[in-house]
Image (cartoon, rainbow, N blue to C red; front, side, top):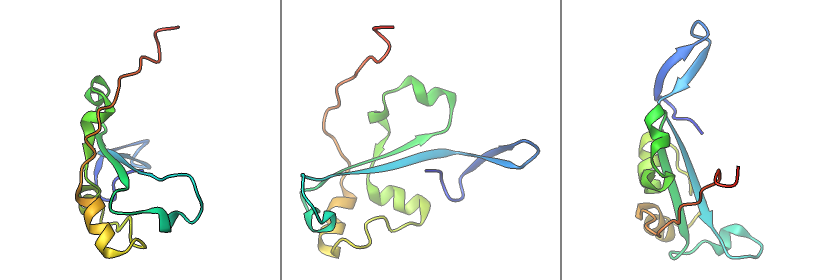
Length: 109
């Protein structure tokens, strides 16, 4: 997803907007139904904010992890609005810090 007001530039004579950054939020849920009821204060949330630059690809995506609160602040969105406020306030302020193992997708090519 792109940033609301974060235009880096335009191309094609101003017809295509190039975003300054990209972001994504992942909610880790146990297997089951009724997703909303399975979100608790212990739910793992992974949020990333990646600048749209050539240098961004030189680092692991895990270096771009931020809190969901940071993404909401930048975009103006309320991403977990249906989650009870007591749970939302806990899970959105935390930045995921679980160690992410690097995977070389190109080693077998």
